[in-house]
Amino acid sequence: MARPARPGASGKPKKKGPSVGTGGHNRRALEGKGPTPKAEDRSWHVAGKRKAAKERLEEARERHGGSSASRGGRTGAGGAGAPRRPQRPKSDDSEIVTGRNSVVEALRAKIPASTLYLASRIEMDDRVKEALSLATKRGLNVLEVMRPELDRLSGPDAVHQGIALKVPAYEYAHPLELLDTIIARGENPLLVALDGVTDPRNLGAIVRSAGAFGAQGIIVPQRRTVGMTASAWKTSAGAAARIPVAMAGNLTNTLKDLKARGVFVLGLDGGGSVTLPGLPLAQEPIVLVVGNEGRGLSRLVTETCDAVVSIPIEAATESLNAGIAVSVALYEIAKLRAEK
Image 1 (cartoon, rainbow, N blue to C red):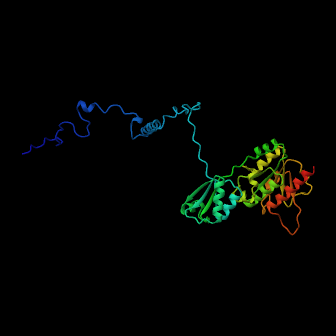
Image 2 (image 1 turned 90 degrees about the vertical axis):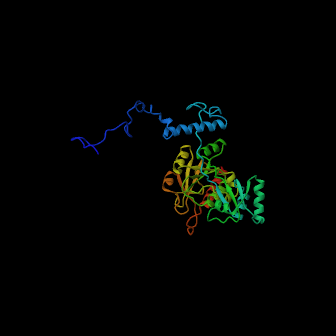
Image 3 (image 1 turned 60 degrees about the horizontal axis):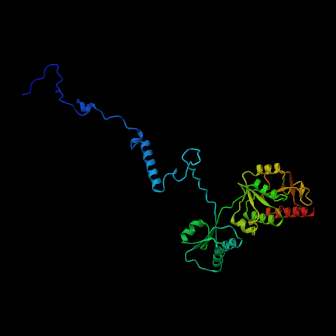
């Protein structure tokens, strides 16, 4: 029979020995777990993960010929042998020319190209044979690919007819460096700048006219104007291989820089106050600026010009195509320069 509890007692039995959660009451429990390990020695810590990754990197370097220092790389910041920062890869600005006629014409015009793509089991007609022959003579890469891959390269709206040509991005000159080169050759500068011309065929025609009438280069702004595409190359009829095209980050600022170097900026516009025949500035260093057929020269460019030149035309004709206007102006300037 259980003994009755004494008045005032809690009624709970006395504890005998340590229980879970008390930490224990013996010497072994009081010894503790030792000092807290460093952050880099804890595998779950960020510092520990960083240390492990560094060790794996060093092991990989040793397996592939040693560390950067043993391969002649730099070991200190700013020192003669510090590792070089890797270059950021440039975006691929190459162009794909598709279609049998277009590819053959591009190869005939000797457009800079790198690779000719042929679809697997393509029908070898005369155009494909000529394209293959021209590409082989120029030492271009010729690759046979499956049609789905050619579809991907050409784009969703292109009709490639089983053949495509890769044209690398055009390497533009710098406008002021182009001017320096012309002066170093002892030539009187005659340049053409495009302000808002968006048709590549116009650019190609202007390049062709520049080659025919003694202009030494073309300047295109970085924005809102066409660049040297495959279509422009074809329209130039080979002149693009001789006439450099420079790119200006800001056309207005570039024209001001050219003016500071002694070049006269002449704009072409139907409402110009100076007529082209007998142009008094023809003997001076000139950059001829042509605008968009619809809007003409922009306001900032017009304000930068030393003179705005007009070409006399019949009243029934509203305006001239940009390529034709440049051709007429370059012809007149070349004629006046030859007379002196």
